[in-house]
Length: 441
Ligand code: GUN
Ligand code: FE
Image 1 (cartoon, rainbow, N blue to C red):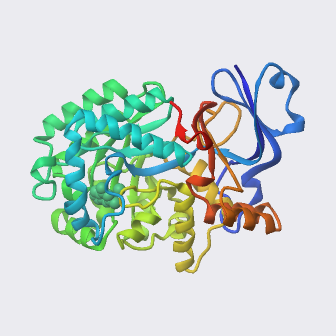
Image 2 (cartoon, rainbow, N blue to C red):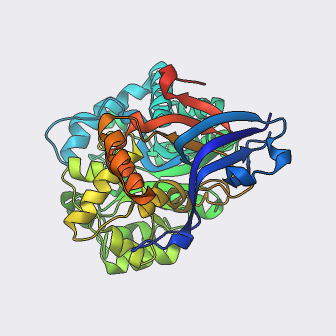
Image 3 (tube, helix red, strand yellow):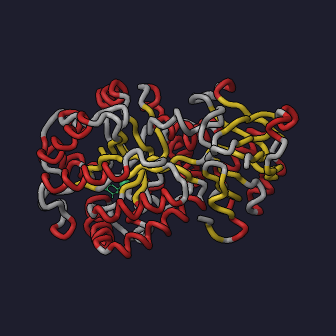
């Protein structure tokens, strides 16, 4: 049955930039969002202008006083690191060896992979995230577990088996035995999942140090053969990592190594890119590749302060990533809070409008999914999140005294987290309800 949801409705058409350009968004206080039987948007606008034929016979959902935004898009996260979050005392390379690889090794048991995939999706939906591009582990069964459960919940998700074959940086217990076997497994998974319902396959070499040159070359060939596949990896996150890549691969820069193997495509997503230069930005922009800005992770591991403004000035597409388990929250609101602080440390700002753009349409654009998700244009898939300005005392009070909507939105961006996510919907269906205390499948 068609549905109509009432509340304040906010969505974006482009990056509002800095200072924010108000033609980049639409805000309907006392708005309505209408969804057809097919789970697609039929209307977003003032409630009073909702066409009669859309209201008649529709189920009504009342979120008046709350804010309805497109579902959040997390452009970098690890499904197999749910138990690694908040691991003490290390920077990237030692953190991987000490905490991450042992945790990922447990995914050789399919039962573990299945249990944690469900738990992981519950966390995303509770945070208001409806689409993510996700690192599982080297084990094909971890991809099956993730995609199976994403499909059951009707979610639009990207994932792909992690490729890691280089000694000694990929440990023996978590290593592809050969490029040929990794390619075979990848091709099987692509056949099983890519383009099925709302799922897309992302070829996933972990990062340069765990990749042999033949593995990166294989990855590039796959992307050339299937231009509709995605690619996700890490790049230039940490200074020791950058030095290691220089030692192992030579080349002008870290990005140059990936470019050499044909990994810079319109559907490529590079997490972090903290330690890059103007040439790297120009190469990324020319290829239409995107960067995931992961502030909670970059601060937690002491990786550095991503230069968001330089990236956007160079026309590099940027999305937000939580990067759990180096990241410390599943919430893109919390991630925006930290992104704002990183901007401030760099002498810049990040407006609430630009922030909410990044968490929604910006992420969809970074993933080349903005033809189907990211805003409420009619025909888009109706994934949305309902935010509650009264979720906590602190937020409620700041909302109360705010002089206008812009201040309220900024308070939500800085003070909000999972508690502010009242409900999450995918294709118009409730997939998380905060007050019932559990996710609905
Ligand atoms: N670089 C290579 N692997 C990882 C990972 O799992 N997390 C982060 N943050 N960086 C990485
Ligand atoms: Fe990561």
